[in-house]
Length: 284
Image 1: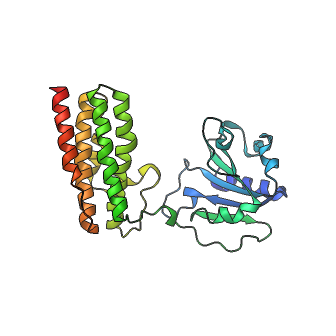
Image 2: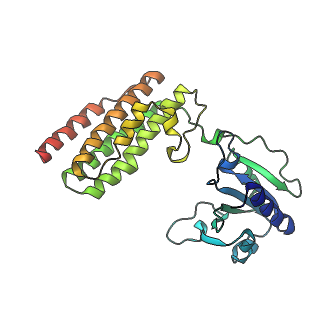
Image 3: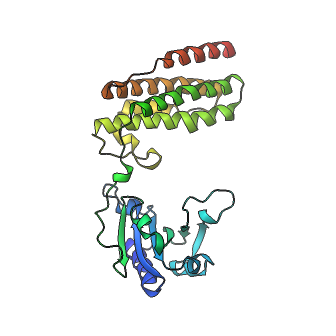
């Protein structure tokens, strides 16, 4: 497996040898000040170019980075909507195990790129068009304090969608129930937990993409209870996990409400009673 130095040298050498590439940036975890580097990290690289067509009309030029065993082109797919506007990306898994996510950005949108997030470091700027960049920070990813409306919206969504999970359980529609359980209830639970972590850390921390750092910010008891909600392979287990998830959500959201001097909604009691009645009706 090539080292970080070898990969970055290769990326910069290619850029220096091609006039259409005016600048090179790196983003993401490899320049994150609080993430320890390992061999599994991607190289999130951006080429700022004068002619997009040179780099999107074919893929042969990518051979310079090594043999690819897999590649995805998100902006070239028909099933999913592109997310990068006029930009284009190649997500490459190379034969030596390195992964390079290479983004192509037109020079006309260089300002849009450099202000797109706080974790950007310029590796090459041929014409000094970018100037001095601030030190990369994780500011873009820090937890932010909710407003009272955002807090209530989170609670509202959690308790309302709990009825969808219940409906799926009562009807014996397992995939319907688990989809809402995992996609919505968990999302709102982790949002609420992140706010609680933010309060405790003065909103100076991030729990990372897909809550990857959550475990280190919560107690062992809370972590074990969260993990227990992932046992959902039978209807009985899903019922138990639903009630446990609701219990956790209630505890954390009441903590957040108290710390921020927000009102905790009374519809929790109404929904809880409604769900418990349905559970008794359909499982007795």
